[in-house]
Length: 199
Image (cartoon, rainbow, N blue to C red; front, side, top):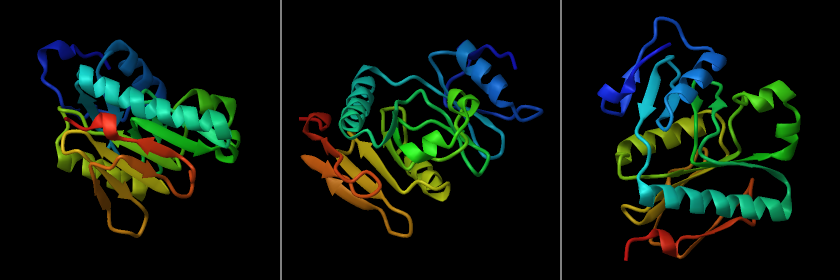
């Protein structure tokens, strides 16, 4: 699928004549960096603008905190925002940070690990940027739960809050928390949030 994105204004939704294979989606993403590209459950390609400077530092901070904690406990695999996951509903989505239990990761073949892993992470974090509407990010959080995430956090530096999503529970929003402490499946992980909030 060849397309010049420079004349279009993201976010863009495209419906190819046939659903892109993983290899085609990966190649299309490589050819159109730095846009963030996902596939929804209908096979539509969603093209999003890169985040700005502040948004990028927020994403990096959150992902680094998760990586640092995981390096200490070594009970799973941590992922940054450039990882895509093939979810049970047929979509291929990329969280801003994610964690997967080690036994689930080890159950995959090398080819599955090298491509878009065919599963939903156990824990995900989405960080809202200036280009994201709150309703669109909230809808994506529900998609993560619907596809099997056990815990999901929406970190919103714009509204200065963290919303915690758990299966079969209503979302819980914390306003300007200094620290958010995780529960299963990543009990022990903590995110210090003060630096994320506007002063």
